[in-house]
Length: 195
Image 1 (cartoon, rainbow, N blue to C red):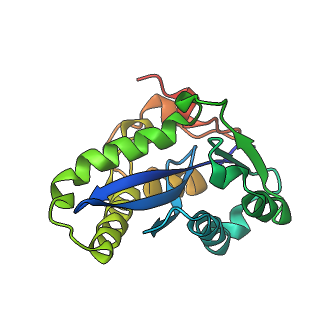
Image 2 (tube, rainbow, N blue to C red):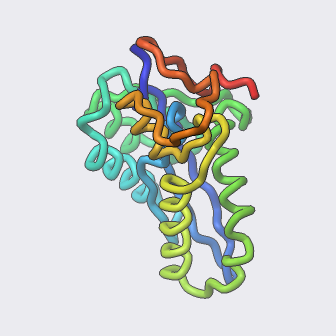
């Protein structure tokens, strides 16, 4: 049966603040839209991307199958031996976008775009790396727990994951959107929801 933790998306984005940049690496579940792991860095060295994968394995390793696929662009972090060896050692499959094609990782790009829009006013008040890291941690936790999405049956990503596991829709008195009804062979929301 198809379910969460089968297709994961990962990418890096630049966060400008006070004339500098911080860098955010995330791993997003293509089915539940949860951000499963994230790391903020003041450097673009590959280490923080590896730390993101290690955080994923620490927090969700028991939920990952050997056929779990982690999709990225063809950036130098994802083509590095250290990244590829880490995935291979944990029996996770790697997938990469076509060269120069951002549409191949559209869900991840969409998350970054919406997040930056939502925090842009707060970014102006950040003058240190610690302030940026705190802001991004707060925003990602808000997104996972409280950012309701129509394509996730009007639930937040974490609520949708619990709904997928239990089959119990948490909003009483609310019509469950047809695209979100669970079945024995649940299909990915990204292709099932048309509205």
